[in-house]
Every structure is written in structure tokens, then in C-alpha cells.
Length: 143
Image (cartoon, rainbow, N blue to C red; front, top):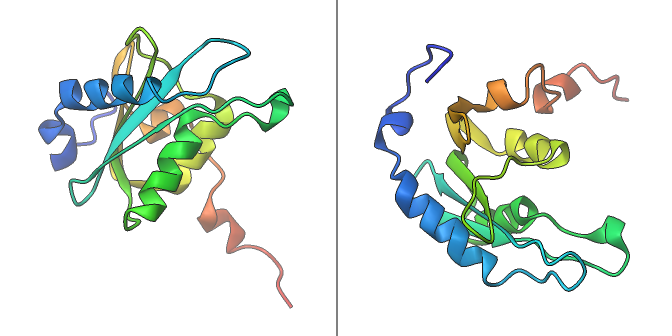
């Protein structure tokens, strides 16, 4: 990985398998407004494959990104943490998660999680530096 962190996950990722699963997910996208299909796929720490597609809504702000559907699949299939992630458009071109989705992925990442980007493998910390997460909530004043 570019930041010098080594993980066993990063060396074992079958990116072609993940990209194929993400592309297959685009076939299930509901995109009557933009026509822009997105699919996401990830491997969990225990080796399961989870995926999702984008789901648009006439009220554009209610549209669900593929990453949201992927996280639903993660929770429905047993939970766990994401070890490797990829996102593609309907043509198979690598697509970066939006800021909201980077935050969601950060919450469910495994230590050393890697993402395949157009610039190569990146760590979660590289695509969402100085992220706010569950550890930050430990500082909250609770009654």
C-alpha cells in the first residue's frame, strides 16, 4: 500500500472478482432519472462477498448510493467488517465513493481496509483523512 502499512488482506485481494461483482450489481440499479448505474462490491474479513447498487428516487435527495445497499447486504448477511472495496459505473469504470459514502465505509472498515481506485490501491485513511468516527463519540458528555 502507498502509505507503507502492510496487511495480509491487501495482498490477497482478487480485484478482478470484486470488479466483476460490482459490475454485475449495476444491472440491478434503479436509475430512471440519471441513467447512471453504479455497483459496489467488497470482501469482508471472513472472506464473504457483499455488493450493492444505486437506487434513485424522484425526490433526488432520497437516492441511495450503491455503498448504502452494500452495507445493507453486509448487515443482512452476518455483519462484520470490510477488508477490500471497489465501486464501478455501468461500464465497469472505477468510481470513487462520494464523501457521505466514504464516511459510511469508514464506520464498517476492518483494520487495513483497501479500496481500488483509478490511482491504485488506497487505504481508507487515504481516501478519508482525519475522519470522524465512533472513537470520537467516546468524548461525548453523557448523563
